[in-house]
Length: 441
Image 1: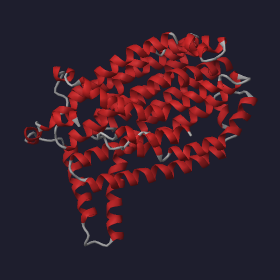
Image 2: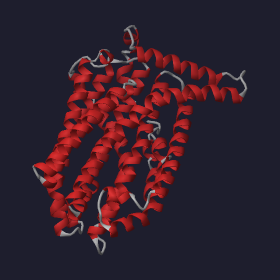
Image 3: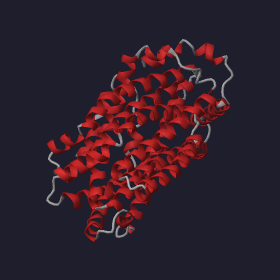
Image 4: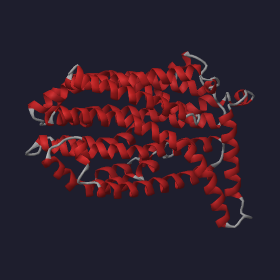
């Protein structure tokens, strides 16, 4: 890759720098795993047992905090929708349309573009090109902030866009109020995703989990005050969500610039971040395509629900289902992030067998977890909706949709991990086609 080659000239110089302790441990573990997988003298079953033990331990160390971060961040969105549901049925439908119909557009696009940092930083870290991680972080943040400008225009004209797509005037108007409060969140995403991937590439994941946990507590408290004390309505709830994300951004950035664990990878702001933006944009855009195909079909479902005979009830029931799916889907996203870090680190260290083995284990683990969760959803299908609303008709509709929800969970247990580890080469665009088919057919 162009950006990886950019850092390769620093490899020898960087290798003389004292590496971080996490890097030393990571390379030691990687070499052990590669040696075991390459040792044909060992019986195949013994090799599998030893390799599985090492990989599960390494993957758990990365995946557990990553899953926690994604699920806690998702809980902020889930709790926001719950607060909206207790404001009224119209407000729940509007919040659903605002989040899944408008905000999901920016989330999928910016998360996908930010995933380029995961690959580049992971390979640079595996190859001991530590200084390039900070450059990639800044370069990605610049691109995502620039992308946030046209997204802001879409948010401003969300009412007109929703009505143009056939949504009812009352729901579109109410949804637009909610969307206006999420405009600051666009730029929070633009700052958060590169920082999150920057830390994950270095196997620094626990601090993000702690920051997200504290932020969630603050978010719940502020949301309760906004809804029940100050009575700011939908706009207040969405503004609180945006504020909570910015609290998390500031905390993560302070950690990066102050922590000893990032002293080799964050060396301050650099003008080098402004060079090679076009090449970096191509990688980011390619990364965004797959993520968008994966997340936008939920958005299309919500928009179609708003065109049904009883749009308010349809949006309410589908909102609950997509909220549950989105929350549980964060487990697969967290495993995807962990697996992507493992693969990029291993490839950067020259361990192809370890990289392939990591993908197999992460995919299998994600599938098993999602099958288990699908069974839980089916068991609780008559009770899930009451966390959001007291409407009996909505509860029945959600119960009827739960079997489809369970199937969706199982299928999505495999796809994200595999699609998150597509090889970044000139054939990338061809690899997006199977994901398009899986999501939309």
